[in-house]
Amino acid sequence: MSATCEPRATNHFGTGPDGGTRRIFSFEFLIGTASWFEPDTHRLFQTRDRCVRRTSETIIIAATHVVRNRGATMKIVGINGSPRRKKSQTRKLVEAVLDGARQRGAEAELVDIGALDIRYCLGCQVCYAEGECVQEDDLYDLWEKMMRADGIVLGSPVYINGVTAQLKTVIDRLADAIHCQMLVGEYGCAVTTAGGSGISEVLGYMNYVLNSLGAVTVGEVGAAIGRDPAALDTAVTEARNLGQTLADAIQTKRRYDDQESAIADRGEFFRQLVKANKEAWRHQYDFWMEKGWM
Image 1 (tube, helix red, strand yellow):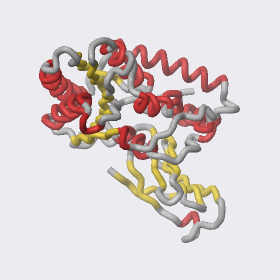
Image 2 (cartoon, helix red, strand yellow):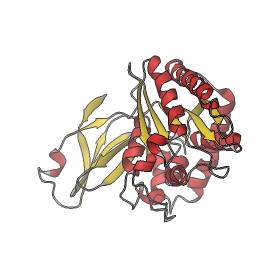
Image 3 (spheres, one colour):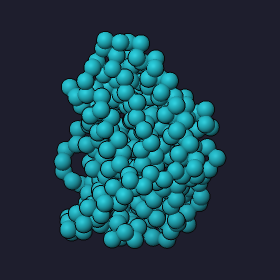
Image 4 (tube, one colour):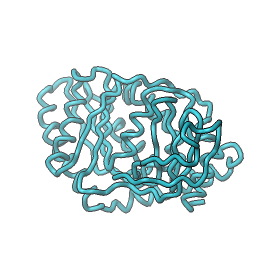
């Protein structure tokens, strides 16, 4: 769903090639946050309740209300955190969840983050202050997919009772999104495979991350396949059912009162944290103010 946004203000870094304020752009409608990746400058820009576009010379702000597209087609993105990509057993579970969601009419996409260039967080906190990362890599495209989605599936094999380095690297880069609760209104779930131990810890952690971003989780599936490879077949069936549950929750806007209460408490913590650091974390403070949450 897109709309044309009429510019109301322009922050000049020089004169725009077609006259600056006369430029008109089309923007995607997203939940709460609008985000765009600018190919020419390799920068991602995000805002709440406004449309923003940056070219190499101009930032243009347009008045609009930003909401998630809840049209006929649900969008679900599955993230496989295994470095083994197509050889991954965890990927089979992620794909099964997506297959189940497709059976309910969802549009689903799988992303192997092991194939992406996503660098470690530098801890510089520039994203807190400016709303953008200093690193130019594939996280921008992945985050855009997550923002456009109605549901997110996180998948990782168990590596020493934790998620893979690849998935942890992505999670560490989402601190700004967590502080701003950017996935409020989305749903998610988690899947994992393991040789033996660590399944509950890893599933719990991935669902915790989704909750920390503001999303509600609908379940989890794990399989210990070290001694029983056939356990994967059972888990695939369970994962397909989980995908149907995820899609059903999105379609019916299912409530999860306990989670929603915990998410609200966590949101209040971040509200106070951002308020206490409002001078240094200007982007985040403005974000909360624009949402009317502060």
